[in-house]
Structure formats: structure tokens, C-alpha cells
Length: 364
Image (cartoon, rainbow, N blue to C red; front, side, top):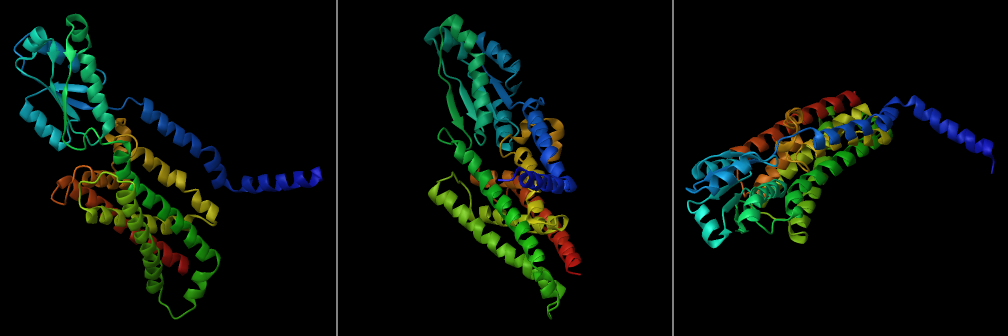
């Protein structure tokens, strides 16, 4: 083995990377951006779950517990009536609320057992856990001084005690898997078509430009829709992901995300010369949306500036729509779901136009 020849190959490879500024930027700059984004999400002082406190107790202990909750750092608790709390819970403004009944103090002093009603929205287990943690902490002093047994009655608007992590993430990952794989496959496959000269040969044929554009889009879209159906069937039949909604609505949302991914892949392929450069768009296009779209971290708990950014990402509305359908059983009569569909559809039309314009320019 010749050290000189090995060194020559190494120098040649490093020289190629030195001239490829895009790869160097991805290699050294993108990791810092991703880590900074993750750090800001975890330590940026985002919001805490909103909670209602319904204090109907006529004795001395109810106000003590209510005060403990209102000063909690785990939740943002506000005193309100049970009617308002239930309305806000159904509107999604609250993650849960607690009801301290009129005989709450009497129960604690006589039976040494308190069983307040805790009502949880339930669609996001992390927020429900924070509510239960805050409630438990508020009773710590009471239990320690009076020897009171704490046994809350917990009920759920959506989901339930058996609603697990897969049920929560499954609704989001169904759309994410389709979006991610379709985007990568479309971008790489389209670049291969260009690199092999297929576009130029088609242009030399009697085909019109509009026919070529539409043909490519439909071809990639058909494959994407088949994949979307496969992912949905596997998730519901094999993995038994929780679903309370209409399967057709889930597939329509998946289909819209597949169309977005196809045309986004075609559009961004304009800015790549090789398949390797096309893959480089993953940390720039996919990873930020994974962090900000509410897949891992609820949007309501993100720092304020990141919440604004989340609300302009199409994946945010797709994830919210999928969870509304699968977890809450929403239909198109829900204004929130109609908004989710409308935003994703609008973005799909936008990227279709951008991809068609890009493809015609490349063919010309």
C-alpha cells in the first residue's frame, strides 16, 4: 500500500468538498442551527398548560388548594366556573380543570379522604401529565399535615387512561412518514431523470411541455397516494393506532401532504445538481418542521417567536388536522379542521404552481 497514493485520494476528496460550498455549509452550519433550535425549544421559556380551578368549597381548605394551583409553576391555573371550564376545555383553551366540591373541607376533616373531580382534555398526554402533577403537588401539604388520603376522580374528554404514546404520536407520524419519504424519493428520482437526459429526449418528441409537466406530477403523485394508503392501513390494522374519526378524511389529509411533498421535491430539485445535494434539503426542510409542527413538542408550549413560525408551516396544520380526526373524532363541521384542510390545500396549490413553473423552465 502506497501512503502517497492514499494521501492523494484524500486530498482530492477534501478539495472537492472545499469547492462545494453548499455541502460545507450543511456539514458545519446546519447542525448548529438544529441544535440551537432544539435548545431554544427546551430552554426558551415556553408556555405551560392552561388549567381551570373550580372552587365550590365553603370551608377553609378549598381556597388553600386553589391558591396552591394558581401559584404553581407547572401549570397556569385560573379560577372559573365549571360551565366556563367545560366550555374552554372543549374549545381547546384548557388542558384540564379541577372541581373542589362544596363539601370538600368536610370530607377532608371527617373522612380524611378527598376525591376532587379532575377533568382532562386528554388528546396530549404530556399536558395531561402536567395537570395531574400540579394537582398532586397542591395536595402535598394538605396530605402531610392532616393525614388526608388523596384519590382524585379523573375523566377524559378525549383519549383516556389507555391512550398511550403510540396513539398520540401515531396520528402525527402517519403524515410525517408520507411527507418525508415522498419528498426525498421525488427529489432524487427527478434529478435522476434530468441527469440521464430523459427530459431532453422527451422535449425532442412530439409531446407538449404541459403534457410533460402534468405527466411527471401525476406519475409521482400516484406512487405517493399508494404509499399513503399503505401507511394508513398498516397503522390502523397492524399497529392499532387509536382512531375515532373517518378514515376517508385521514386519507384525504395524507393525500394533500403527499401532493405537497411531490411538488416541493420537484421545485427544490431545481436548486440541486446531484442526488447528494437533493438529500441535503432534508435538514433544512424536514427537521425544522419536525421540531416546530407539534409532532414532539405541543405548539402551545413553544416559546412565542417559535409559535409564530410554527403557524406558517404546512406540517403544523396537517398534524393538527390528523390529531383532530383520529383523537377527537372531528369532521368537516369543525371550524378548526376546516382551517387545517384549507391551509394544507392552499399550500398544495402553491407548490404545484411553483413546481410547474420550475419544470417548464428546466425543460425549456
